[in-house]
Length: 417
Ligand code: FCB
Image (cartoon, rainbow, N blue to C red; front, side):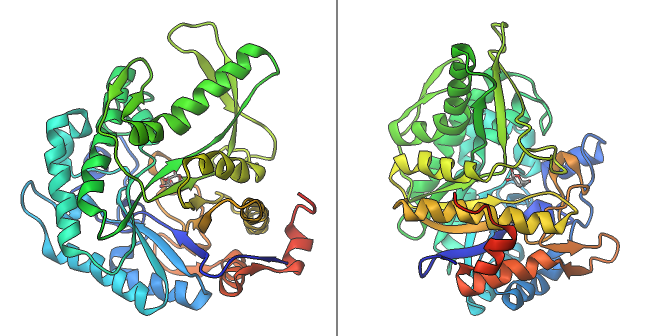
């Protein structure tokens, strides 16, 4: 049996655009209408069905819930906040608290209000004033939540939107990407100053586990480099005031973090390449069968990540960890094995305070649309009917009891790790 400490949060995660539906004020919606992205439509219709979602969490025994505010909903137009939308988010927080479910709030989870995006979004430093107004609005109106994350996966956002050109505004310009990343650090600093004191303010970093494709010195150096750039450079920027981008170093205001969130999904191999513009290539590590995202599963990576991040001396949360698969037995195995490694981190004295499975329900997986299914709860996108999978109940038992039973470990676990 693996017991988690009292107060350890075992919960689930979602984000607004991926579940709410009808977020017509957001840049993803704008670009979907232009045919550049899969339409989100009503998504899971959680804007209307949020009470049902929370009821499920309570019934199943989940202890915490990470979700996000849709900035475009609360600021549909420049300078004009929408009070009703704000009240809704407050209502969600209140209902969670009434049910003994600890809320965690993310302020930016990839989407922007369209008006802000059309002004150049985070590319332009002067636009940070709009971010400031949004954060102030939250600070002045939202209560009953302790844990607030400024940004979800800021480096993923900068790279997918400005290097790979997969997400709005579809640019392929690393110089712009690093400027955006620097501006996100500045935006974090602005938010920290406003929010700290009222909330415990953190940031959520995605951390793939990078390994060298071979033992060669060049591959090892490439793996170290990408690990630094992708996994640590922004955090170091926040802590030290010097952000080492892809090509340039930026002076940023050193600011604070009260906690650090880690999203962990997969392991990736890194190969050095002889091309001065592209120093390395990445490929799937092929250590397991692939999930429906084409990712390789490697439970030990969650422990390696927590160990690496423990160097920042902050309380850590696993803010996302999950699997896209229709094979629900595999989902159970995935959860049990990753929790084994979270537990090992705890045993070694690493300050981990919670684990949030991604996701509570199947949802809109960005450029992939609705195909990948990460949910503990299955969603029928025609009727919006929710059906808990077996994994939802198994994870519920784990969350309720604060432990992974011997029976589960025997059937799904990794044995001695
Ligand atoms: C993370 C995102 C989250 C979800 C999962 C699968 O990178 O934060 O919104 O899409 O991946």
